[in-house]
Length: 555
Image (tube, rainbow, N blue to C red; front, side):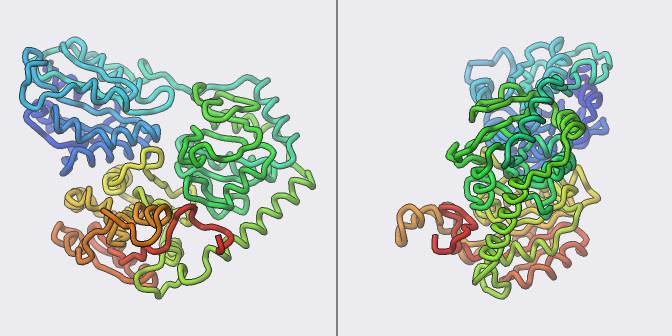
């Protein structure tokens, strides 16, 4: 059959539903084949949005998100979002469409060396120079994206192959080339882990992205309750465990919180579950951590960033089932006293965080903590939460989420413009759920054209714009490092009407000026027949530098 048709057959074999991208001359035979399949082509307004949507589709479904682009400028526009997928372990396959083999290296139109461009930010680059390699390449991309630590793969089709090539296609089960990676540790390792958990007096559990990806949060909570120990998450681990559980003490990241730092640093031992212990989670490896027990299904992660007293390689659900079956409820008085003291500290911390003008719901422009408090009243247990880089992400520390919520953020790459494509992907993957997109005006400027894509393809997205008329996070860092009067290159147009733009692009929209107005606006958004934007006039003067949510206000 035609090579383009064979490529689509492999995608159908793998259960693909969507391909995100922008068409071009080199892609036409591939997109024409999509037209005759059950797979839907979601054309965006920028290739970076296509790759960002593929990233979050992979995070949400656990199967590779798919995107495509033409050679040269189309391909380079994918790079930033693919880097985000690599750093946050998201399975993704990007299909590039190169010029002809005869023209390679001769300066053909839009020519670029895709291997050189992508090799540092993907798990594998696979060129397809002959039709006989096409089916294998498609299956190899899926296998590599899905096995080990998930991540992005590039498949680069030369134009001769996809337009003129023919090849054989024999259906295969995905399991025949992508094996189940459920790794079971030895009984001796589990015995050693249980012994250490019961020996140390003050144990903390630290949940990373692996807990969210494996949906093992309920087993983490069961273990925490048996041991009577506190739980902290990374930013990528937010929504893996219920934020309102009495043993959950919030997230640890570069900007906070002081409470979660205390939970980790005051322990005798930290049980790290499914976390790479990246620079973002550890304040660029500045946390003073005690003994570490690290559990991860990728052996190369064990001890990579911090030395461990015990490393266990295994799939988290399997490890936690084995540990929960052996560990007994802990009645250690010293541990109970420590946890009780942490709970008192949390009460004092919360009283501090939610005090004063920063939590005034009537303040205009809207005060950040008051806005978070109002949002927590608006969330439902099955809402999807997509948060952008910068201040929206930093303040989202205060979100109260259930494990049935899903939280997505560009954590380790910090790529701005993430939440619009994230909301697009979440809406398509879960059309029966409401999707929130939290974004600053800086990031919105990078993806504003794709508000039209949101209008075209979704009906269940609410975009909340934190408009502080600046690149707010960087403006605050300038203040922290240089003091007043040194702002440069960070202020944006104060008269910009993003709600008006959203209306012109087909969304319902409104602008509000205080946190008190938010709940009613969200209800109008939920009732609206289509997606919606709420532009919030946001007070950017409350800084997250050097660390948000400090306990002692005088700091």
